Image 1 (cartoon, chains in turn blue, yellow):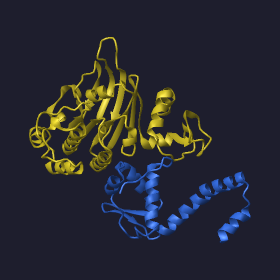
Image 2 (cartoon, chains in turn blue, orange):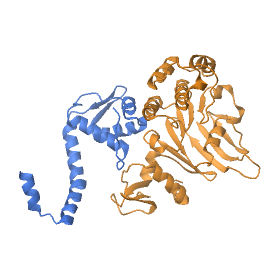
Image 3 (cartoon, one colour):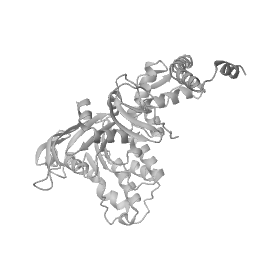
Image 4 (cartoon, chains in turn green, brown):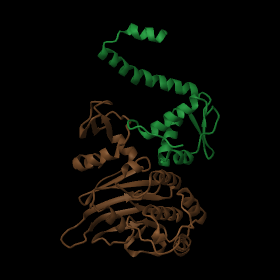
Length: 118
Length: 278
């Protein structure tokens, strides 16, 4: 599989984002068992402790449920949880930088509204 | 699993490589040992594995003094040297001759690793193989020994591009909580996703020995203050894409550990790094 990691975000968070995507596009559905830590570490060529950290992060955000000795499973409301998390990140990070660029370039809000309504 | 206490060592009487090196390494991790040419990385690895004796101080491995070179310890440690020695033997006879030293040597694993590296047992004599092929054979052997301690000095030197990827895959699958892996390297780009502990050696002492987790807790890797303008800047590197910065991470912002930048920061602002990780 391999993975092209970017240089700005911690690798464990990039694996979290990848998992979000897998769930949002339906490759991984609520109730499904996630790949084992080792399987994913081998696939991404990363340290298993890094994948473990991603899985713990997913667990604390209630995207994954850890069934001891069996593995990690996607929770029933994972999709809603991910959308909430993504929206929060979008509003806190993407929108401010978007607005900053708008002001910098002198773009009127109505131009954006027109684009949005198209 | 490995404890170095106040190690002093020099190859000649009037010049010490190490004045006072202390370091602890635990199982369950892959350590990246970094240092400039001549910093003493290989020497340190030799002291750990009992191949060199410190002038003073002690190297303890698996609860035994390394200088005693006990068989029960040596069978649980494998040291893949950068300058590889391979005898005039075919792979089959090499394995027959050397695997009995390692009680947990797994022949099936060895064959599997050879396949992964696209090596064939039917290849001719080991000493006639290319540098990369020798290296891959010995990496496969090293992993198949299943020793608790695995030390590799520049393992990716001489590997072609697909083999580097194979190497990372094999290492990711071999790493577990009972094993300590130490990789000494200059090829940080090859290995940055694999290591979870960073040890930096400079001028006869350890500048850093910390987990990648702890490093990104304390340090922030940023470009042009994109993530934040706060926190003391420890190191800056100008580039066409902006100023790459290493700064104190005052707001617990997650960033991607850039090993080259970290290394340069450690070389240029040594005391700040040492103090931060005390």
